[in-house]
Length: 150
Image 1 (cartoon, rainbow, N blue to C red):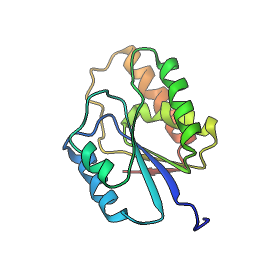
Image 2: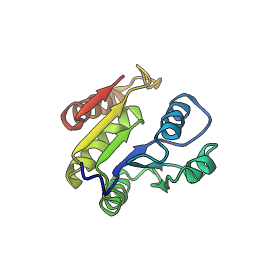
Image 3: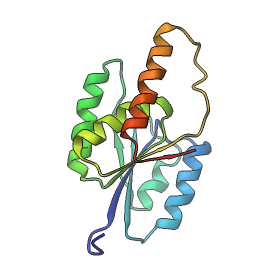
Image 4: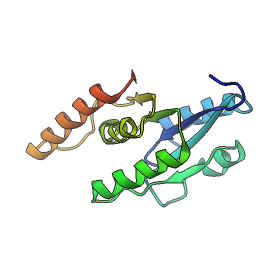
């Protein structure tokens, strides 16, 4: 790693409420303050999260990539976000939807693609569509993640 430029990391979260995975991320970012790592956080919501003011005070950017019913529109916006941010690492914390994010990250050429698994289930009712979605996302995760952390 070139010590002149910080390692650029994008943490992908659904939102930033005062909750488990978000609190763990904040603990990490507080410890990384003033280090050779520049961490930004991507959220899928337009709503301002509990931790956003602190993120900004730590020097992180909060970037919004709204998730709506049109997944292809989301993928295009996420692709542009990754290209513009010139990230070295994408760290996904959105369980199954990480499969989409990691596939886009590999298309951009992000060398390090990490998924953090915080749950063992998505707590959704199982039907044919959901079973297909889970299968597709798990395949994408296993193919596109360089590291899986549970």
